[in-house]
Length: 373
Image 1 (cartoon, helix red, strand yellow):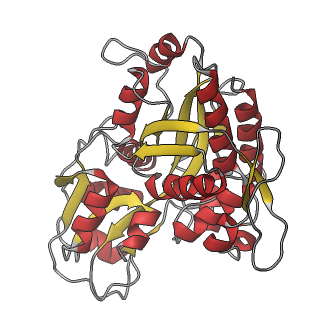
Image 2 (image 1 turned 90 degrees about the vertical axis):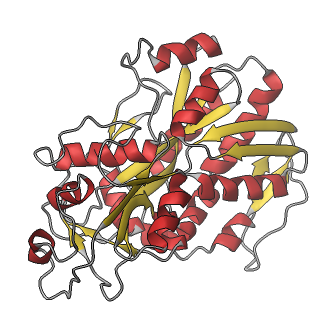
């Protein structure tokens, strides 16, 4: 899979990218949108009127709020509401018919759990297959608060042993061994985890199970099974670390940046890797397609040893009915998702701590959105 160059994208500012959107009518005629200050051409946004209600992943909160703001600026008759309650809650609300689409950091499950299969439940509700459309690439940062330690390298086994409670101080020999020359204090390690059902938790524990199988033996899932103190949502764990010296958590890159937390470099076996848009892109390049047709679920390689590839990532999917029961809702859903997945909107996301969808993935997403009815 060919990945677009993230370095080039970094030169595009958030404000400039969002200003590229101009409202178009249902037949794609241009509306009242403007152009960037540099005089570059505007990209038409297809508009539809009405209200969409959606819910789910808090990992994508900052990204989807930016997309909603620029979409509603371009399309005055459209309202999109998003409630960042967590992936598990979003899927439950979608299956109950309470929202028009769900955001989830894990695709709908094809395996039976608690007597139910999510894909089957979704098809029953929709009256058609539900599709998982990757929309946001969110690197998961191992974020910490340790004054005086600006650079920290961690390996999968050490991360697992921190989060399962076996490594309890910052000057532990296992951490010191991989951080030669660093002045590590004897400060107790304070672990914070997501107390709500979370796709971020599921992806982080998938990483631990794949990259450190001997140290992390628990089954991956949306509910935390390690040690520590629980806080609700991404904002809760990031805020807790910010206010706690010695704190550590797993949180999306955007939340780590917003709270000015330290971000560990990860050494999966190919050398320490800093979290950047480019290193995330190298890792996403190893993802395999795990869906059929326009169901675009991806299988990430958490154990990759590819040099320069940041391995702890999640992909947030927008989960939609392939055939809507409400034609007006379908039209508005298509318009918003086209805007969200557009090259301009995706390019703007790196500015706030996300990585744009690779070109080949974005092209497939656009095809799937066109097929929604």
